[in-house]
Amino acid sequence: MPEKEVIERAQQDKEEGKSPSTQAGEFVREEMHHIREGKHGARSPQQAIAIGLSKARRAGVELPPPKEGATSERTRKQAQRELRKGRKTRKSPASKTRSRATLSALKREGRSAASRKSLSHQARAAARRRQSKSQR
Image 1 (spheres, rainbow, N blue to C red):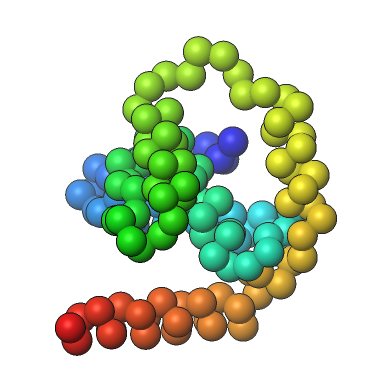
Image 2: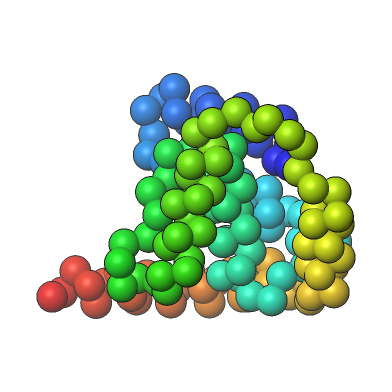
């Protein structure tokens, strides 16, 4: 569950008319903090970003799923499911067993996914991909 301040900051971004990806950035930022403070780990910066985007969608940020061909069909379907979950109010609390299993799996992962070096590498790679797309 995202922290209250994160949801409030995302809500403020929405009120200021900022894009859904900016709003979701708050959740990604929170995820990086969790990894750095040792709450859990992640296999890669991409996984940490994906967890943050997933939390954002479930918290009600209208972040569209990735376009076809950008990622796997499974990822797109999961993003659509999370978007639907974010739009409706939760009837029952999340399964404690599943939550615990997910957290314990993440705790076994490394902490280097949120390091300055790996985030810098990820940002540069993403920028290179964007540049090649705009050149087409």
